[in-house]
Length: 206
Image 1 (spheres, rainbow, N blue to C red):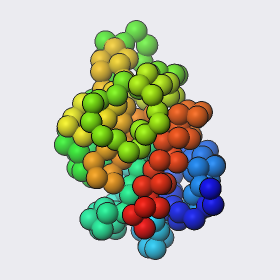
Image 2: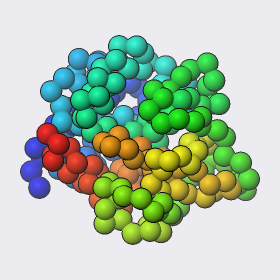
Image 3: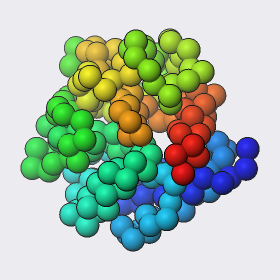
Image 4: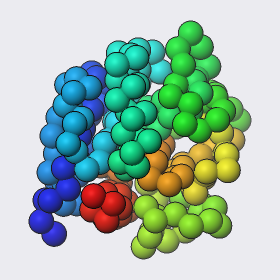
């Protein structure tokens, strides 16, 4: 598969960009690092990675939000990974003074009922019975790699859940907006398949 999908990978200081870029390139993406909002011009897809505390999303200010919202409005495929997925919701109790983008309604809350937090390691993806192009070819019960202490609620857009103490969204998808709580760049064949499906979505909509 030729690297013909131009992917804007947002660098706001809170993501493992090297691993994410490697995964995207392996799946057929032409990765372009976005250090500022203008770097998202003329891309076919946008990826927002992220690890750590929700306060790390503070640099995603009004200028970033405006460009991202315009891109989403123009139906440019968007993928949020881990903290990047949580930012797509209204906000998180981890940093209540900050707001998320609000594409998906609800707040991210601390994982409860688990023997060990943070949730670190491999866990299953339990599919929700609704169409999800980015999960094409990923069997229910497939394993993916997680590392987080807060999680997004199960909502109408949830296409996969995971249980670690409580049950929460492992993946959400609506139109061309996708979020995954797990790290596809660390999830072997399952993660590579998800990234390839996302790039196929971008290729078809370009």
